[in-house]
Length: 108
Image (cartoon, rainbow, N blue to C red; front, side, top):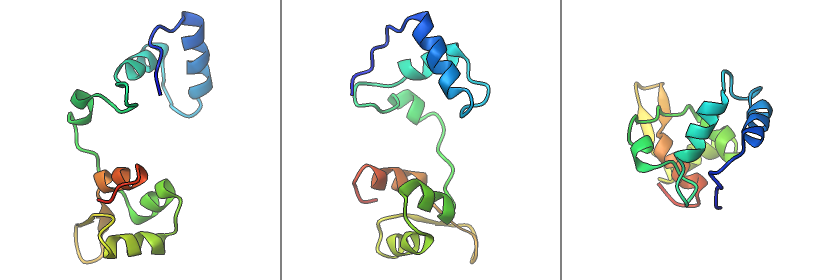
């Protein structure tokens, strides 16, 4: 996907209006900054990606992101497709990197 970064003010304002119910506090300037931070592969530029590690997801959050059930998330962790982050015996999270990698069709 190629992103045309030369947006008119009208287009930018319209896009901001459409997205504002979903992204609270979004301004046209912030939207433009986000668009400019993406490279030709549709991914955030390396400086943006490495600036702060993403927090691990709960099993439910990962299931929603991958459009699968929580038991499927458990199977993915058991067979190594998702990376488990264990905080205690009961508190388990899934690394954000492994979820994103699986979303792109890879294996963690």
